[in-house]
Structures are given as C-alpha cells and as structure tokens.
Image (cartoon, rainbow, N blue to C red):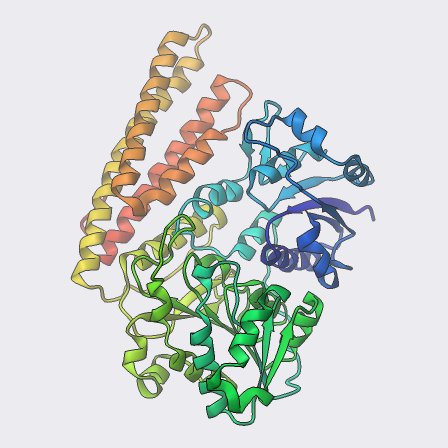
Amino acid sequence: MIKKTIALIQITRIGDVIQTCIAADQLKREQKDIELVLITRKKFGKGLEFLTKGLFKEVIYIDLKDYIKSKNDNLESVIDNFDTSFFHKLEKHRFDAVINLSFSKSSSYLCQLIKSSNKLGLTRNKQGQVAINDQWSQYVYANVQNGTLNTFNLVDIFKFMLGTKETVFKGCSEESSNTISIHPFASQKKKMWGNHKWVEFIYKFLKDNPDYTINLIGAESDAEQVSKMINSSTLTNFQERINTVVGESLEFVYQTINQSRLLVCHDSMASHLAAINTVPTIVLSLGVVRPNETTPYSNNVLNLVPKRSCFPCTIQTKCDLLPCHKDINHQLVSKLTSAILNGSEINAEFFSKEVSPFFMESVDIYASNFENGFMELSKINESSFTSQNMMETYYKIIWSYFFKEIEINTFIPTLSDTVKKDLYNNREGVKYLFELINFGLKFSNAIVNAAADINPDYNLINEYVAKLGEIDKLLTLTKNTYPQLQPVVDYFYVAKANVAGRNIKEISENSLLLYYSLNNMCKVLYDLISSTLKDEGAHLES
C-alpha cells in the first residue's frame, strides 16, 4: 500500500505544537494510509520528541532567525534567507498535501515554498499575495485572529482542517500517589494569577488535605519565583510537602503531570500536556485567554472564567490593575480541587450547598463536553447569561451547520433586561446587514449576467464592481456599530478575497454564491435572536 504524505506546518508556540500532536494522533488513528511530516521551530519542537517520535515520519526543524527580515520582503528575498539544508530535507518527500496550522506571515511564505498541488491554511499565490483556499482556514483568519467570538477549540479546528471525524481520549494514568501538580506560570503577566494568590491557594489546600503533597512546576526562568513561593512565611510549615520541578525537560514535566491526581494551572502548555492522557485539570483563564479556543482538549477539565465585561482583553490593551485576577478566589479553587479529589459531582447543586455565593459573584465555571463531536464548554454554575454568551451560542449553531452540517440544540436561558436590550440592538444590526447583502446580491447577479454576454460591457461591469465596493464600506461601518456581528462580516471579507475562478464569469458566479450564504446566515441569526426574545412573528424577507 502506497501511503500519502502530508506536511503539517506548526511554527508557533509549544502549546500549539502539543495541540497539533493531539489532532495528528487522531488523524493517524482514522487513516492508516497516511504518513505525516511535521515542520516546526527547533526551540519549540525539540523538547517534544517524546510526543512526535513515532507519530510523524520525520520532524523537520527550522531555525527562523527571522528569515523574513522586514515587512517589505518579497518571495525571492525570503528564499535567499533560507538555509539550503532545509530544502534538501524537504526534497526527500513527495507531499500529497501541505497543511499550514499556523497563521503568521512567516508560515504563509513557508507554505508557499513547499512543493505540493494541494495546500490548506495560510499560503501565498504566485504573486506573493495571501491566499486562503479552504473554509476552515478562512474562518480562522477572520475569527480567531481578529475577534473574541470564536466558538471552536483550536484542536477541533486543526482536526476539521485535517478531515478527522472521531474524538477518542486516552485514559488517565494510574493514581500512584496523593500528589497534585501546580503550574502557576504562563507566557504573559496578564495570564498569571500572581504569587500571593498561589501561595494562599497552596496553604489552603495543604492545610485542608493533610495526606497530599504538591509538585510545583516551572521552567528554569521561573526558578526565582518558585523560590519566593516556597520560602514564603505562610508556607513555612508545609515545605516538606512541596516538591519543586523546575528547569526539567518537557518529558519529565509530562511524566510528573501524568502521575498526578490533578493539575491546577493557567492557560499554558502544561494544561495541554495534561490533556494527552486526560489528567483532571483546573484552568484559571485570565487576561487575554479565550477559553473556547484554548481550554485543554480533554473530557476531564474545569475552566474558571471571570465574568468581567473586559475579559478577554487583547495583548495591546494596557491594564495595570488586572481586575480579572481578583475575580477568582483562592478558596473557590481549593474547594473545587478537594471536591475533584474526593470524587464529588460538581454541578449546580454542589455550588448551592458547598460554595459561598460570595466566591461565585465574579466567576463562571465551565466543564468540557463532546456531545456534538467537538469540544464545547458548558456553564455548570447557576449564572445569568451575557449578550456575549448568547452571541457565542448563535455562532456555534450557525458555523456548525454551515461548515459541518451538524444541527445543535440548545436551551434558551432567562435573560436580564440589559441582555435583552443588547440582543434587540444586535437584531437591528442583523436587519441592516441583511439589507446590504441583498443589494450585494443584486449587483453581483448583474455582474454574472453582464459577464455571460458574448461581448461583455466592461464599463458596466466596473460600475457594478464599484457598487459592491461601496457596500463593503457600509459593511465595515455596520460591524463597527454592532461589534458582535464582526464574525459574519469578517468571514465574508476573507472568503470574498479568496473566491476561486479562472475568469471574471467564474469569479462573479462564486461571489454570488457567497452572497447567498451570507444572506442565509443573516436570516438564521435574526431568527435565533427573535426566538430568544420570544418574538416569533419577526422574520426577514428577501
């Protein structure tokens, strides 16, 4: 049997490489006639060889050293900056497909350079322009890169791009000791709870659970912070029950986590290591973290999420006070930790009986579920829904059907008057968006008809194109006025910019189909909002 060879490009962070391994493992389980080659950065991939060995036919390392020297680099200059040995390694393989799972400028050039007739993800065309050929990559470029309303986990997005269908989890390792692991660090200050919070949690947990010890995990660069924690006067009487795992290899960290009863951490690579064998995990999502995207891909995870309206923020947002860090109480984390270790069922009844409402005022708690074949976060504490929550739900329904033809059923919660007002406002925005799209349909259809003439009137076609350009500007104004409609508008822009076709007739026909798709999305979104508001008589007509 001749096996097909697929190249996967993943040149972003360690956590992304781990998530790529999880998706790749699923693909190999489903399709035995495929061999995979991973292209990744040496500083991210080398320490993960305990995961990549056997999973990939070869791992080709690239030392970027910024082969794109400036924003003005063209394809020729990028090629000149590459080490020739890199191309020799690529030439050993005949790639049936190249799938770029990174969405950076660097990765787009890299994808363009690798020879294959089938390419998914961000790449470049012969003119050096960005090209995104598949729907899922267009979705990522529009919604994951630029917004906060993405509803899909990154592992699922990778899996969808790879074409996998099933979700299979490995079992937890044997409970060998009464030990939990804590990884109190992250790549950014905004994502980290703070030493004093972690010290309070460690004290509370060790005091309430005298039979347990803790593995305190950190990188070599975290050694000073680890020392400050364990030498805190608060933990003086507990130092013998705190093991430090600092500066060890990723394989050692993986084994340490795998032998633990539980991992408590931020959104970090440690959580993704725990997901490989579904080690029970509590994640504290803070700052720029988007839980829907980066919650560890496991059926055994709780995610604590601030209710604060400014969460999640962006890297560019300046925030010195970090108010979302105060929203998660150390006593709540300790209570959840003990409950998991005791085998308690954590549900609305648990929070009602066991947890003070003062601890729950500023936080929502989500558990992972896979009922629809992909990861979804379900709120398990009794809490009111925000307009953001509702819009996420609507988009989950729309995108799931649009891309996967999966119909999702959901309940309509009780909403506050403020949320209803926000939804009414969004519905007005959808109505305006729908009207603009209908104008787009009109002019796009006119272009199709004009292009079909034996002697097309190109002046007339240019007039119609100009009209569509005006509509695009109005769409931008609409999404700025109604920010929670950004996902639909941005996806439309990206998909439209990458419409396929060999001539103006084919391009205009495919553009027309895209306008019809957006038209239908608006109808569904309008109906969903109306159903939530129990305004059954409201509907849109073309």
